Amino acid sequence: MRVLFVSYEVYPLAKVGGLADVAGSLPKYLKELGVDVDVLMPLHGSIDRSVLSKTGRVQKTRFLRRPRFFDIYKTKLPQSEVSVFLLRNEDLMDSKEVYGSSDLALQAMSFSDAATSFAIEQGYDIVHLNDWHTGLMAVYLKQAEAGIKTVLSIHNLAYQGVYEDRYFELSGIKKAYQKDIS
Image 1 (tube, rainbow, N blue to C red):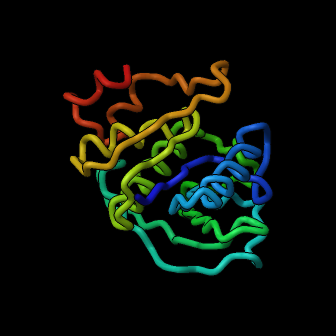
Image 2: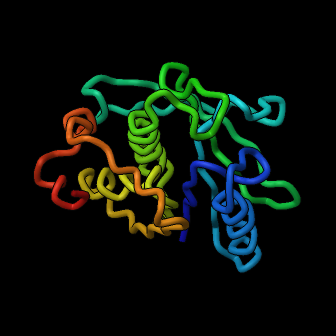
Image 3: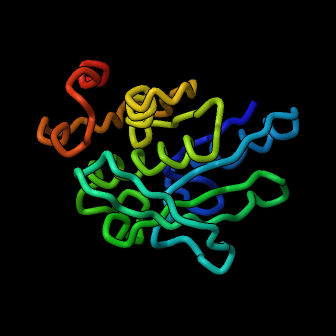
């Protein structure tokens, strides 16, 4: 069983709050228990690239109705064998701060879309999503009929990622699936 742990922040690479602590530690414990787990996060501008190696590209096509490419980088969580993959698109991931994008909704949708392609291409069985920034992945995976199971953990209910309806049009989510998230 292969598990992909998806988070917008992972300690020690990027930390704003407690989410990073969970994302930087829970996968280590799962690995120690014998779970084949990897971590996926955005490559924020503040992350030190000297600890990363570029491993490829992923194309996403559902979002904004045109193909976009994300570079894939890889490192390991310190003192572990847990691989951390980071996705980067220069046009959409421009902020040095984790949540500093001028359009965080657009950035989170785009990351979720690219992360969906990554999860499908890599053949994960379960995707563990964390907070609203990654939640659309569950819908993208369902829409793609990928057969990948999802778990969503909400770490702080105060942050919900509620945005205007116009984002539905940009998301590439078919109307039949929009009811799942509205």
